[in-house]
Image 1 (cartoon, helix red, strand yellow):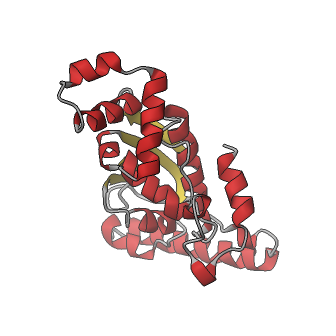
Image 2 (cartoon, rainbow, N blue to C red; image 1 turned 45 degrees about the vertical axis):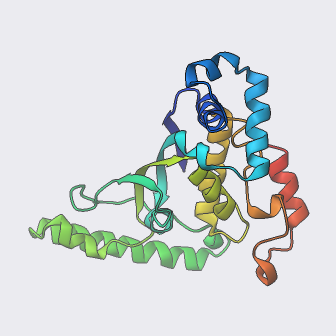
Length: 228
């Protein structure tokens, strides 16, 4: 799996700070920018985060190239509606000998892993046979499984990313999208350490939002994300 930060709003933290300060200032953006220091920007953003005033965070966007993931993952990812997506098409891109993602739960179950691989191999052969017989790829793809590897580009603003991390960094999130969320968080935090300095699952700032379905590891989770 790869989550590569392709592009982002230039100086995302300064952009958010200027937009937010404009709401409370009689001055224009240029005057606000002149007074902003790195230390002042960081302190102001932390205040906004603590107060829950996140609307200005929407002015900073981040574009990720995501590869080596399954269709199972992307079907979950696109449920985050406040985002833009461009995914590799199975209609136009032939999937002969398609790579696929094997769940880690099969790692120590060799007999089941072999059965899993055999079924996927048979699907690949049937798919190729349809293509060779002149069946359009858009119809042959009906055979392709959720395990099939895919690539996708996604753009989210900082507010939506915080929401995404709150849900998908949770231990109860499906393992693959959890791993993706952790990778995206590392990239986002590298570029905007204050905006995403306290990002992570919902339990790191309060009680577990999963209630009775909690993983029961709240202290371990808080240590993991606060140490980053």
